Length: 353
Image (cartoon, rainbow, N blue to C red; front, top):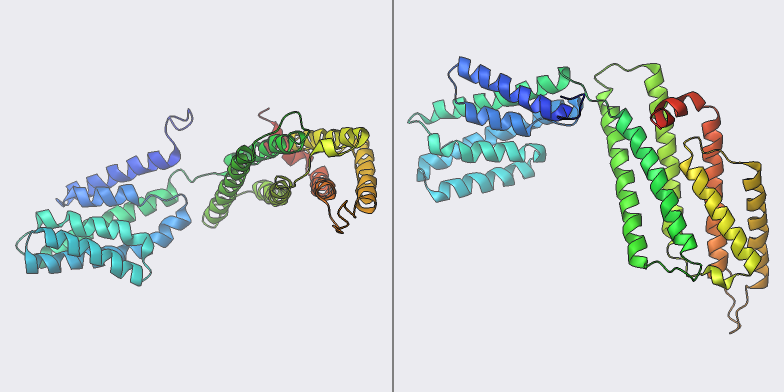
């Protein structure tokens, strides 16, 4: 089922954790519901997170159970018991910086109130024990069973973000030609989607780095991962320049015909480089960028003084050209970085195409 993407690894581990937890509780004739609920909510993205948060959830659950016993002894099974147990559990756990255990602790505190036994101490030990079983089983299952491999999703995410950046660049620059004007709100929305996708890929990278602290990995896997981090770093710079370009108040119609054609040609060349997993740069592209560089200095010299005699050292048109030149610098670094990684590029970014 996992191979056919019917169920993800985390979903499978949750089901297995619930099954084992229920078996253990049934064997010792303990209440199942608390342990099962805990097992469901404690499966994490990585084994590292499971271990770290298990150490937080146990004392948090103890606090929740203790508060529930205390208020039940005072107020009985009333609405104020539920309210005080939940509220103070959240407040105390937050004050003690046990935020990752608040959910489990609150569930423990409120769910145990309806089924209290006459012996409060026994109820406390029983509920804390069943909650602990859920935490321990989930942590062990998450550590040993189906260790996650986020690398394929990282490589896929990087390809998708580079493709998104290429499409966004086209919309920003070609959308300034006067014939087709894209709404700034639409551009802004697409840019936010780009940054969100980039952040998600960074998060997956963090998960993979944490996972490798506890599970073996090959040298090839590490080299591929490190190369992916470099590509993500370049993407971060590209996103920065795209963010600047979307706010440049300049239209291509304000340039001369040959200048406008050059900017469009450079833009389409950038798009091709972004979409190419190897990010190869042709000699023809370098020639176009040299022309763009000369155009930058020409515009800066010829148009620094406006009609109202206000000296504007970087008119919008000059800023547009400057950002495109800065964009090229990032692409050139990216291309150089990829030259020595052809095998990794083919295996991780091109083998599925």
